[in-house]
Amino acid sequence: MSFLQPMMLWSLLAIIPLAAIYFLKVRPQRRPTTAYFLWEKIFQEKRASSLFQRLRDVLSLILMALAAAAVCFALAQPEWNDDRQDLLIVVDNSASMGAGGGGATRLDEAKRLAAGLIEGLNGSQRAAVATIGRNLTYRSHLTDNPRELLNAVEQIETAPETLADSALAELAEAGATSDRRRILLVSDGAYAADRVAKDIELFKVGAAAENIGLVAADVAYLPGGDNRLGVYFQTASTFSEPQECDLTLSHVGDDGQEQLLKVIPLEVTPGVNPPERFTLEDAPAGRWIARIDRDDALAADNVAYLAVRKPKPINVAVESSDRFFLENSVVAFSGDDALLKLVEDGGAVTVGKSISPDASLAVIFQPDGESPWWSELGDEVEVGAPRVLHPEHAALAHVDAATIPFVGARQLTPAPGAHVLVADDSGLPLIYVARRDGRSAIVVNLDPVNAEFYFSAWFPVLVHSAVTHLVGRETPLAASYRPGEKIPTLAASEDAETTLVDAAGKSTAAAGKWRDLPSAAGFCRLKNASGDWDVGASLLSEQESLVDGIKAADSRKPISQGRSPVHWLTLLAIFVLTGESILYHRRKVG
Picture 1 (spheres, rainbow, N blue to C red):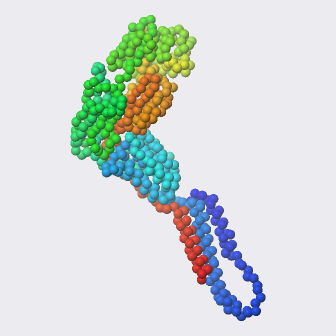
Picture 2: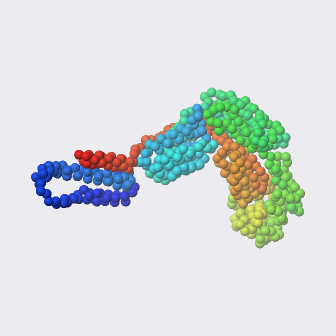
Picture 3: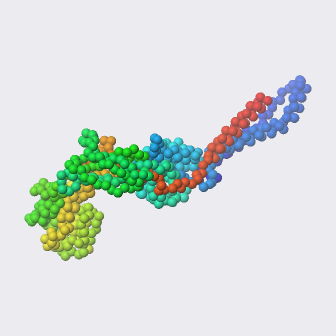
């Protein structure tokens, strides 16, 4: 046995003055009397019972000392030296835990099980409560207070999210950091068993349920104009037999009203079904909802929120004495369905050669003259083997920069703070990004004529990648994301502020090129200098839709349960004091 508060054992010294009280004797006062014979019989009877009286006092002392010792030991908070460990009770609150029938969900069952575990501990060991879905979230700290733990369990709600591998890895790491901790995962097991670490105990809840859900969905305009909308979707089912249902596709107007535009009869077979595609003519842009018209175990996967966009093209101007190839590099990505548009002036981005355009965003080939984007411009040098320093950068994402012949490159010093993407073996910057006073430029240090770069397939691709990166549209928005997922903001720089309006109408503003979606399904809206953009958030998860519960097996082990020694010591003190009180009153009456 060990004591959590060993200093309180000093309180046992209180037994010494308690015992001293019992050994104190009251000296009787002497009084003269003329009738001694009347007192003599009383003295004889008292001497006959004095032994019993002393034994009775000793018994009273023992009882009071026992009660005092019990209280003192209880204050020291003793604990048994057994194999009891701290418990981390983790409740799965991913989307599949919302499945159920008759009003009760799997999460309701999981919360009842977790509450039963906490009540069974009776304060005899410490525990903490957490939830797991897209992230591992701690709902309470480690404590032996059952009320605090029960309150944490009561507040858990289902989130329309997928149980992520990163969250399971974090949970496994939490268990590996201490041998005195047990992790109890209360879940429906709607995932592969090998995704969970072996030392995590699965307390499985929920029976197999019949469900049909959308596990993938996408919409986009097809090339060729005429507002031809391509629709892609995929379904999954846990029914044992093929099921017939309808997929409805509706457009949501600015007033929030849905207009039904397409009904597709489906026959959904057990398991994951092959993807299906169809085309809608003259489809408007904006918000769309795909919905499976069927009552089943899980409603969250019956709906997909999709955003259809026709983004405005990026206006690109050209400044150069020989404009032909530069203009054609822009025209190559122009047209009804393309992202770039060639303009005479006033472009969002200016592409120049042998010039430093006075523009907020610029792509510059063959540096020449004075410019805020370089200094100490020297003569042409023979370039060594180019080294791509940041192949993952958006400006180089579709370019094999190591194969570009950097003929005509000049010795230069890039602007302070420039981000060099490609350099030769001597460190000479060949392609770099620079930002200054709210302006940005990508500088390509080569002579495109002597290097015959105009005839390379990489030339228009590099122009396209550089332009889209400068305006922040290198990563297009998808039709739908999962709740809580990171999305591009289409901002031109990390300093640009973007406002995110969630489905409930709440606005949050933050700078950066990426934002986290709220953990809720529905439509959001992004607002920044580049424009306003609708964003859909949908479950779309095969793992969460297949709620048959056959992928993982229960692995629970017995849990040490029982009341703390403090509880029993307190009861002992109360019992002994009650007994002594009864005996005392009997002595007084007797």
